[in-house]
Image (cartoon, rainbow, N blue to C red):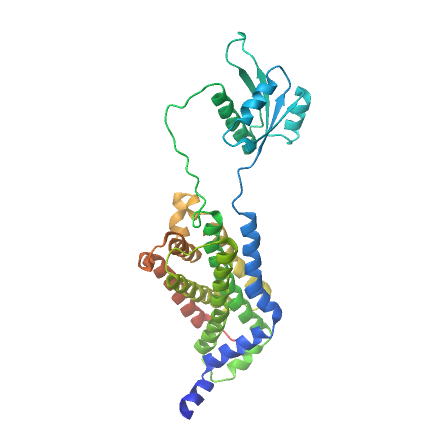
Length: 362
């Protein structure tokens, strides 16, 4: 590189601002933890909490009587014998256990008036507790089968438990989007207001540097940390929980870059005029909380009413997460995500343009 070009690079404001911000972050070990360590710990905790588990046991108390042993034996012959945890108890003790939540269902077996007739059962359960209602249905189904009931239609049960179909596979793209949103908003917006509060921006005002250079330097420096952060998260999810990317890795990386730019622009916009940490914190929460709730981080955004969907689908986190899930879980091509990409580009461009217009140094 010739000396003139080397000199122009050396004194190009966005490059120097980016390098300065990177040096500042690297000198703060706690910042590195929050950037790289915390998202991994959160993924680990949520991955363990929502890991695939066997069907939860149903606790059934059978009231002692002539038919109690036969009832217990009928439940033990279920296709999944470990599903029912049964015990034979006196009626008063069984009812007390139901009232105090220590059992899911009380079964009172009896015989028909005709000793040769079919058995009959009385179920006592808490109708306000979903598990108790489920227990009644499951126990009744098994006892009816044991009594000779036959289903008319033939059914085939196929258990799905492969990578891509688990909740952790659904969760990781949501966590990626949440990480990009938090990193862009707090990593750019909070830093900008903190610099304004400490009167550091006034020093930049005395230089011939343009606002666009300063804002671009902040965005680029944050992106240089944010993109590796989410890529590390992907690698961790792959080897810790077997999360597989079914689509193009390049498409995922492009969506991550686009999400980083979009939320960095939003962070700049929110911080363009805020004067205090309290003010920017309130504005950040005002922007992010609706996206935390409605954008489908932990469950599908389609669960909300149809009337809300036009708004939900255009807030920036929703198209980002939906596009990541389409590529990662369904193997969808990037070309199929052009509408969502267009929404993200619009948010990023408009946010940066407004931040550039409204930004003030002090």
